[in-house]
Amino acid sequence: MAFKDAFKTFPIIETKRLILRSMSKDDALTYLQWFSTKEVREFLGSLAYPKNIEESLRFIDNMNGIYFTKKRTICWGIALKESNELIGRFEICRFIRQSMAEVAYSMAKEHWNNGYMTEALRAVVKFGFEIMDLHRIEATAATENEASAKVLHKAGFITEGILRKYNYGNEFRDTYIMSILNEDYFSNVVNGQNV
Image 1: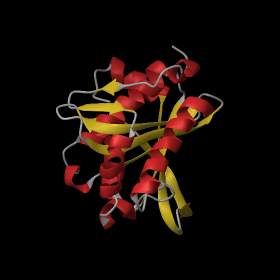
Image 2: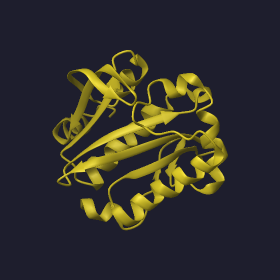
Image 3: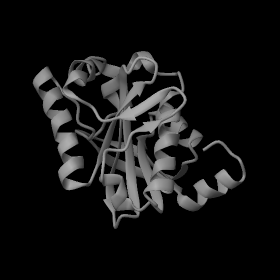
Image 4: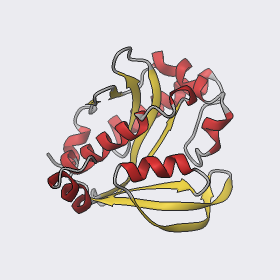
């Protein structure tokens, strides 16, 4: 399957415990509630978050619209497979020449430290390389955000350097630039490593 095939119908990804699916208006209140927690907002950078239910509904509509009309971002809701409860959000975006992309994510605080984000990230990396045929997937994480850097390392990302005083939303922070290449991913798959 090629890059363009990922935009024919919204891709649903299942893992052992999670479903990555499109978000609907039924998710709007849950989505809004995550961001009442300061810790969730702290490292979002330019990743927008809603301040009220209207913004939450508008965000979900906009992200679905960008996928279905502009074919430039896939924004999944991360839901628990057992209950379909929305616990996080995951984007693959900023595609360059249909060969490189960036990932960004957030999760409700009460679901931190359960391995959910690592599980979701590994599934999106697999999708990016095996389905979209990407060459490179990258991510940024503020240097103070050790938890995010740890998640990225567990999924096979390598730290390439630090972007000094990088534009991080409304402020400037030193920020790790990290990536995984398709050759890294497929080498690990062949060698039986968990990526």
